[in-house]
Image 1 (cartoon, each protein chain N blue to C red):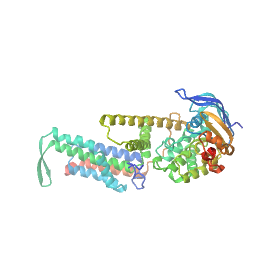
Image 2 (tube, rainbow over the protein chains, first blue to last red):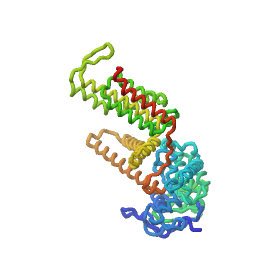
Image 3 (cartoon, rainbow over the protein chains, first blue to last red):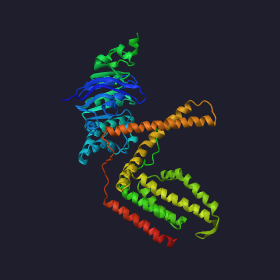
Image 4 (tube, chains in turn yellow, cyan):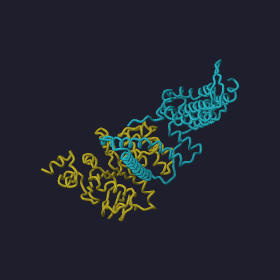
Length: 249
Length: 257
């Protein structure tokens, strides 16, 4: 079985010449749940965009064994789907039904199958009775769940999520954690919230200034208070330490 | 932030809400065209025509206060046009209302005709958008043959206008929080231009992110949606009633009044 994601020596610079990603090499097994952690501006969002084929740099990116290029892009978009940070960007259709159906319709599925997928996706995220609602009538937590439903309806093998926990209160964050933990797909979650990352991921990739600083067991990386403090992060409460304070003492 | 959505009553349930959006749109379009083209638009005739949209608003459980509030909101544009009539046409005319007679000018007559037609047609338009979900209206318009590009643009406008208004409010609030003294018109205009520029740049950023979200879900330039519209017997009955109402008024009312 091919790796879910394989990236070899991938580098990308912004149009103004600033290096966003430098020589990134990593591989992700099928079904892994990975937290992509790092401070603001570390390159997490850019790396997630590179996985979706939205930024073109040097090096190789393979999704489920397929290299990202113009020819494979359509197939890749059915294998890997990205969920953006702001649900208002993700939910662009007049109703929730149309938004969740948007992906399956573009995949060329039959109307009957599209309706089934929409119903299943909305059921999974707990919005089964809200199909006809306009996205701007949803609460922040509902918008986040709806954004995930738009991705689930495409039944991809891999899902990338950029800061999925941002702007959520603790209750909605817990609901989101349970929802993501129950998904069978390979998940790559970009986040600055170490508690959220610790609850979900078995593996963590620490990114800073466009480089991979550490890649391995989430507990091992995130409980290293010195490493976390060096990169402007904190040790999650689950892993015992109290972040900056303990590292400074 | 809470917004006063024009279609906030469109999510209710009533016989009018259940009607096909295409039928409602065509009825309102024809009704508007007929009212606008009325050669004689006296108060009594317009009241007869207003019965139609009034009935739809009542059957659709749309509060009349809501309808009149929205008519008032858009009225300044028409008021300017209507109130300019008495200025350029001062031909004297005698008006009769029952046993009463009084002298006025043709300009004032035109002014009241414009205002009356505006109120009646706006009532019909509000009855349409208050009993039809915007998404259904867009689907209906698409089925009626409106260009897809226009439908997509209308959909995005409806989806993001409130997001944009929220952003503008946030920027204004941030400015207000640091506005300790009046800087004068020139400096204030400069700041306003910078704020507008910021809003513009953020809108472009949003558009780019939406484009990514669309591509991520396989968008290739073709707009695909599942049509949920279906013409039923009740739609045909509504169309027939509306046609008889408009035709009846157009033919008989000028002779009766």
